[in-house]
Length: 511
Image (tube, rainbow, N blue to C red):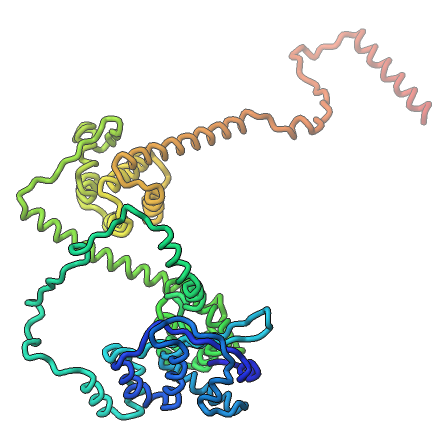
C-alpha cells in the first residue's frame, strides 16, 4: 500500500472487501504452511479477517464500514504507529499476491474510500513454479524445509503412472455429444439480466486491471542489472507512475519485451540528471531494436519458407500426380516482349506467366545465370510479402517491359518492394488483378508523358512577354553601298561647294 499522506489512511475512512472465491482445505494449508512463513502470522490473520467480511456461501462485495473495525478487531492502536503497522501488513499481503488495495475518491463527500480485493492462494503446482515466491520461502525456512513441504503436498505416484505418455489416449466425451442447446431461440431477458449482474464489477475490472502489454515496476527491476549506472534511476520508477507510463507508451508503440526494455534503460543518455526518462532518446533506441527484430524475423521466415518449399518440391516429385495447369482468358493476355518474339507465341508466353515458378521465368529472361541480387529481391517478395507466384511473374514481366521500352527507372530493391507493397495494399492476389494493375499503371504513366509533352510544346510556342514589354533601341540609318560609280558631275560638285560655304558662314555668324 502506497500512501504518501498518513491523514488519508485513518480509522475514520470507510472500506469494503471484494472476493469471488472460497477457501478449500488445500488453500488453508497453503496459507499456513507456505504463505505464513513469508508474511507472518499477523498478516495471515488480517487476510482471514477480510475474508470473513463476505459470507462463506457468497461472493461479491461486503458492506461499507469504517476502518475502526479493523483496528479494534486486530488490537491495533489507532495512532500513527498503528496505521503504519497496518499498512505494513497489507503491503506484505499485496507483495505475495493475496491482496490488492484500491483507493477511490468520492467527490460528493470529499473523502477517500478503500477497497480490499482478495485473491486466492496459489495451488502447490503454481506456487512452486513461481520462482520469486519459492526463493523467498527458501530464505525464510531453508532449502530442505521447502523440499519437505513440496513432498508433503503431493501424493505418491501410482505404480502404473510411469507408463510412456505416447500410450495415453484421451477418451473423454465432449459437451455437444451429450447435450444439445436450443440456439434458435435467443433469450434477451436472460442475457440482459446476466449482463446487469456482472456489469458493475466488469467495468471496474477494465479500469483497474492493466493491459497485457503494460509492464510493472517489478517486471523491470527483477531483470535489471544491479551493477548498472542507471540502477538508481530505475529504482525511482517505483514511486513515479508518470515516468513508468512513458516507458509503457514506448513498449506498446514498438512491441518490446521486458528484456528489451531493461537493455534500453541500461543505455547511456536515456535518463537526464534529474532521473527522468528522455523520450526522444528512448524512442530512437526502441526504433532501432524494432527494426533489427523485424529484419531478424524476416530472415528467419525466409529460411523457414525455403525449407518448406524444398519439402513440398520433394513431396511433389515423389507423387505421381501431374500439376494442375491454369488457363488464361484472352482478355488478360499480355504482349510478348521482344526477347521472346522468336521463342514462343502469345498463348505460350501467357501460359508460362500463369503456371511457371518465378525462378524459371527469370532463367528464361537471363539465359546464362540470373543475377543474385534479383533472386534475393524476388525471394523476399515471395517469402516475406507472400505474393502468389503468378502475381510475381506479372511483376517480372512489367519490370522487363519497362527496361525494353527504354525507361530510366532501374530495377533495385526499393523500387520492386514499393510495387509489391502497393500490390498488397490494393489486394492484388490473382493473375487477373495483377494484369489489370500493370495496365492501370501503364495508363497513368502514358497520361503523365502526354501532359509533360504538352507542357513542353506550350513553353516553346508561347512568346516571351518581356520581349514585348522592353523598349527597342532607335534605329540608326546606315550608309549602304549602292554599287554606282564614284564619278560626280560638275553641277553636283558646285552645289556641294556652295552648300558647304553656306554652312561655314552660318557657323562663323553664331560663333
